[in-house]
Length: 199
Image (cartoon, rainbow, N blue to C red; front, side):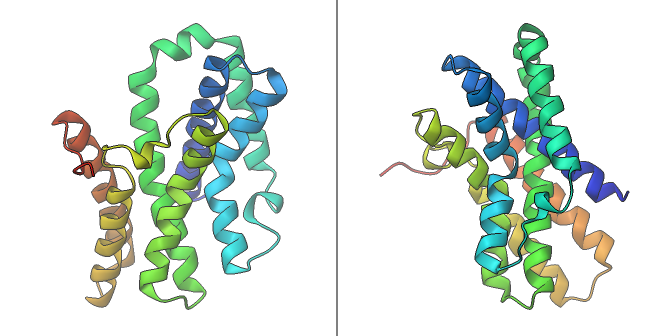
C-alpha cells in the first residue's frame, strides 16, 4: 500500500468519525450514524466517479473503505466522550484528509484526460461534497457556505498542482506541494480567523 492510499484511508476514517459525531449530536440511531458517516467519508468521491463515468465507484471495488467506515463508527460509539475531547486532533486529521482527497480527485480526473479546470472542480468535489451531504442530512448550513476557508483551500491547491505540472516538476514534489498547500491554507485560515467576505 502506498503512502497516498494509506492517507486516503486515514482521511476516510476521520471523515467518517465527523459524520458519526454529527449524527450523535442530532440523536440519530445507529443506522443513521452509519449512513451519515458513510456519505461523509465517500460521498464526494462517489459523486466524482459518477460524474466522470468511472463505475463501479471506487469503494465498491475496494472493501477496505467499508471496513474503515465501520471501524470509525464503532470507535465513535464506544468512545464517544473520548472522541469529543479529541476534536482538535480530529480537526487536524480532517484537514489532512481534505488535502489528500483534493489531490486524489484531481489526479484521477486528469488521468481520464479531463481538462485541468474540471479536474480542479473534481478534486474539490471529492474533498468537500461528503461534508455538504453530512450537514444537509443533519439540517445544518454546510461548512463551505459559511465564511470559513474550506473549499477555497482545495481550489488553490488544485491550481498549484496544475501549475507545477506544466513546469515538468517531479510528480512526488507536485503531489506533496498540492496537499501541503491545502493543509497550510486551511490551518492558517483557522488560526488567524481568515474567511471570505459575506454577501
